Amino acid sequence: MPLSDQLQTALTRRRQLSFFRTLTLPRPNTADFSSNDFLSLSTNAELRTEFLSELQFAGDFPLGSGGSRLLDGNTPYTESLESRIATFLGAPCGLLFNSGFDANSGFFSCIPQPGDAVVYDELIHASVHEGMRLSRAAEKVKFLHNDVEDLCRVLQRVKQPGRNIFVAVEGLYSMDGDTAPLRKIVEAVENICQGTGHVVVDEAHSTGCFGPNGRGLTVSLGLEKRVFARLHTFGKSLASNGAIILCDPLVREYLINYARTLIFTTALGFPALASVKAAFAMLERGDTVPLQEKLHDNITCLHDGLKSLPSSGRLSILNPKQRDTPIVALLTDKPRDLAKWLQDGGYMVRPIVHPTVPKGKERVRVCLHSGNTISEIRGLVSRILTWVDVELRTEQVSEQSIFKSKL
Ligand SMILES: Cc1ncc(COP(=O)(O)O)c(C=O)c1O
Image (cartoon, rainbow, N blue to C red; front, side, top):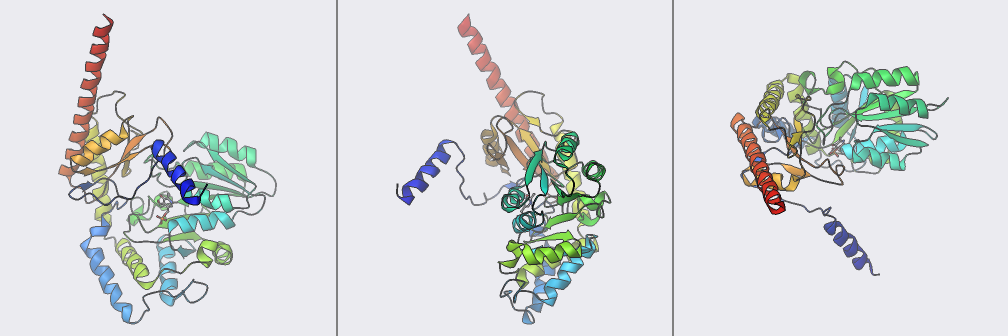
């Protein structure tokens, strides 16, 4: 079969299974309840000014990095930004990557040694899977999402003399909107692995949202010295691009020598670094603290509004007790209908369907931002409630007509 037919067949099959992906443009005049711009920094005037004034240095700095960091792409600006971020986040050192995807895949592909094991939360991001796929670890074993008992069972099973065990978790899970029970995870790994366990925390979604000045979940729990490495990404709350792995100097040196996603790629250029620097300058000064507080007020406002959600099979909150994160998953068997209804009403949300989430766990994901207004949130809640109401009434009518037809 010619290649074009093979590609077309695969795409047609995807379409039939409703897995087909397309690129869409932002819908105009909709309130953002979808993006990862949790602190609304992408439209923040102060950040824009800070970034533009940082760019004034452009006369002194070449715009492009000109190569990999191992060749011509490294500058004193890059190094000083890297160590400034590491210091701010309470780590001995850090290593910048072009994206969180590169950082995770580079890290997990090279740090676990032959014979080691990687134990990962079943909801871990695709970039960790990518790294594990390339890794020399002998075993890659998942544990049930956020289930410390299951983690302990898996750790007991994979533990072997001389084997390192890496435990991969996220601070805040992007699809379920819940945080990792990080303290319990760290304690379990310390107790069971006795020095051979290494917790790696992906703070992609928690950066900016949690901890003092947005330093993330690990710092908020005071666990920075008890985890092996942390990933912070700059593309979500920080309205920029790129990522940093926080680790000790030995791990940094190893990554520089073996992480192919660092070695064989052009390093971040000056404009990208300048925007990261501007965002961290705001975090350091505490300028984002009011935004973080507003975000948490908005989260409370959404949960308060959703209290009046009738208990029915039509719609429920996935993690109703987790009332402090900006991601709220609304479980429904009609995610596309609900998302369209909300989008048509001016509220940008996304349906999340199988295979991104398991069958039966389809949902509409609501992401809150510090820039959302109370009236937007109330409007969103009211439209959700109307949808549920209409759905319940339609259900009753069809039940009545089935009942009548049986008489
Ligand atoms: C948990 C998690 N880790 C890593 C990444 C990758 O980060 P980046 O967007 O910087 O490539 C993402 C992005 O979606 C993510 O959600």
